[in-house]
Image (cartoon, rainbow, N blue to C red; front, side):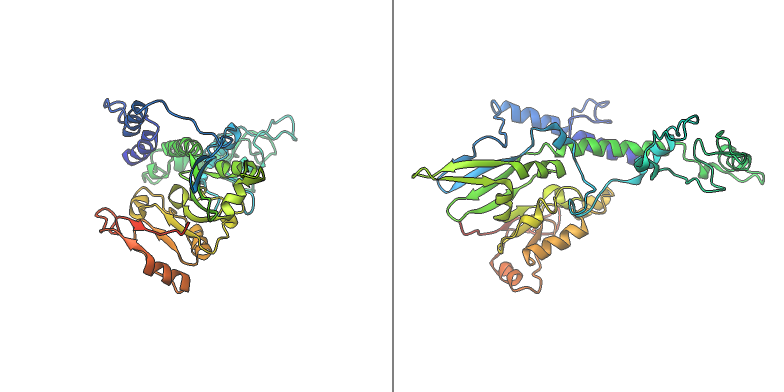
Length: 357
């Protein structure tokens, strides 16, 4: 239980709310960081519709966060091609599926549960497995589990010991519902992530783009598809730049949210990055992620596709770069400069990359 509470506490601390720290009078490091940021002066709110910030040779576009609340709430998608993996645990779905009311007994067509929620029901409706609320009994009624099932539950789950005196506590899931607290915390974290400031830096002489997606999740990426800006040159000729156009010209991608399952869009994101010079870097500490049970961070499928798209020019901040068999990767390895060793991860403290603008 302490491990669960600690994990939720760490997620909530990012929002300035600590399950443990609040009781201890600790306002949380994130809240303290926000107070320091506010003390630096009046903030400027930069919307995607605003004109990019410019200086000679550079334009900086704010691609996100979206101003549409619906996009901020859209943290993932099940659509084919939308993401490299659809995340989300079964635990919360199963818990709420089990607690969901069955269809109205007087109306066979009523379906308040819905087909999607029914997938998470912990038990099916086949003969002999009538554990679900509202499952018909042996006589065809809807009074719940039939007598044999009720007796089985009473003996093996509700009683402290069975008929042979053996302890049955290990079978029970009395506190399992607490696991859903982590799912709630992650949902809160996801929507905060989707409000990330996303910057695209365009080198105007070459048209190359550097993309910093922060922790943006699916709705944030999706909102860029309809974003555009219009510029006029000295002769009054108009040029239109769109979100997808910036992605197509991206030569450096700071991979979003440590390479997690729903922080890099596929068809509306990485698959649009078709530059032959594309380099990507994943800011992640794999050991730390594993210790937090985030076992798919970075997501293996995403890492594999990044290696393909970059021709092996993929960096990860917790490991030293190892060139692959591609000529591009070997040349990149020779040109790459690194700082001193990082005492925390064992990899290099930093990488230095030259981009010809």
